[in-house]
Image 1 (cartoon, rainbow, N blue to C red):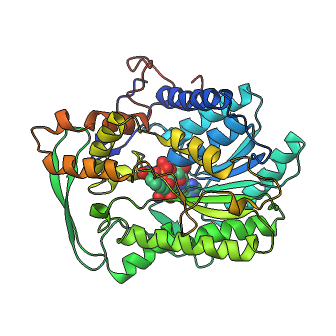
Image 2 (cartoon, protein in one colour):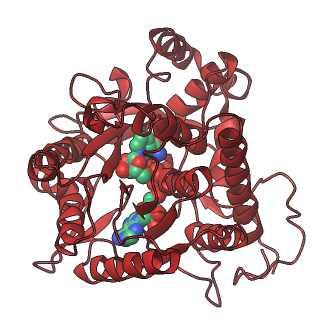
Image 3 (tube, rainbow, N blue to C red):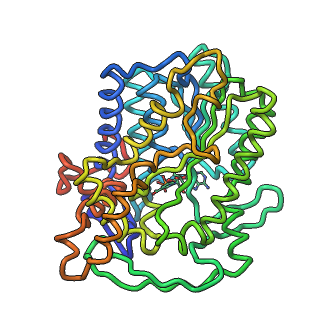
Length: 415
Ligand code: NAD
C-alpha cells in the first residue's frame, strides 16, 4: 500500500508505519547519544517505569527516555487502533510497534497494555503487566516512576458508566483570535463561544486529575508503589495572550484540577513516606496530535519555533523530557535527602521545563512577531514549515530517509 497524508483542518486522518518507525528510532538515537556523553544516570534513576499515554507526544518521549536513557523496564498504556481494511493504524499503534522492536533488540523489557486507561479493567491489566515485566527482569514489582500523559477528548467514568466529553472553550466570555492552517498557511479568526458550566465540569472530568488519582490508588492497592516512586503529570501554562482560550478556559480549569490532584497525592502518599513525591511538570508548547487543534496555538507555535530556533533554544518532545529527567527528576542529589527537596520546582511545587519558552526575551520577540504576521508574509517570517513538518512527522509523514512512493505494509510488520 502507498500511503500519502490526508489532512483536514489540522487533523491528520491516516499515518505511515515506516515514517513512525524512523521517527521513533531517531528519538531513541538522541537519548542514547545524550546519555553516552557523560550524563550517566545517578543511583536514583528509574528501574521500573509506568507511562500512561505512552504512544505519542510527551508520553512516548517519556517511555523512550526511561528505557534507553536509564535502562528501565517500561510498562506503557495507550489506546490505539491497528490497520483495518480501509484505514491505516493510528500513529501510536506504529510507534508502540517500533518502540517494542527496538527495545527487544536492545534487550530491554517492555509490556504495552492497549485499552481505555480510564477503565478499572485496564488499571487491573496494567498491574498484572507490571508484575509480569518485573518477574521477567528479575526485579521487585515496585514502580519507581509513573508518568501520566493522557490527552483525550472523552472519558467514561468507571463508577457510573457516564461518558463525558471535553471541549476547548473560554470561560465567561466568547473568544476570538487568529489561527493558522498549518498545511496551506491561511489565517482565519477562530471564534469560540464561552463554555457552559456543564461543559467546563465535563472537561475537568476528562482532562483533570480525577483519573490520575484513581491510577495511583489502584497501584497502591496492588502493592506496586515504593518509597522511591516519583510521579509526574504534564501541564501547560503559556503566555498571557493565550490564557482566554487555554489557562483561563476549560482546559486550564482541568489543569488546575490536575494540580489539586497532585497536592492530594502528596498529602496521601508522600507525607507518610509511601512514595518519594508527585509533581506536575509544566512543559513547552509543541506540535502533537492533541495541540494542533487548539485555536490560536498553531500561529503561536509558528512564531515561537522561529524565535527559539534563532536563539538556539528550540526543543522537541524528546529534548524536553531528557531535560526533565536529567536536570529535574533525577539529578543524582544527596541520597540522604528526600527527593522532594532536590527536584527543582517553582513556588507552587511545579517543575518548569517551559522555562526557556517563557523567558522574557523569547516571549517579547514572539509577541512582536505575532503582531506582524500577514497572509502574505507568513511563510517568510514564521516557522510554519517547521510546525507543518512536526505535525506531519507525528503521523509518520515528511520523515527524512523514508520513501513515500514505496509499498508499505499497513499492518506494521517489517518496519
Ligand atoms: P498526544 O495526543 O501526543 O498523546 C496522548 C496519549 O494519550 C497517547 O498515547 C494516547 O494513546 C493516549 N490516550 C488518549 N486517550 C486514552 C485512553 N482513553 N486510554 C489510554 N490511552 C489514551 O498528547 P500530548 O500532546 O503528548 O499530551 C500529553 C500531555 O502533555 C497532556 O496532558 C497535555 O496536556 C500535556 N502537554 C502537552 C503540550 C503540547 O504542546 N503538546 C504542552 C504541555 C503539556
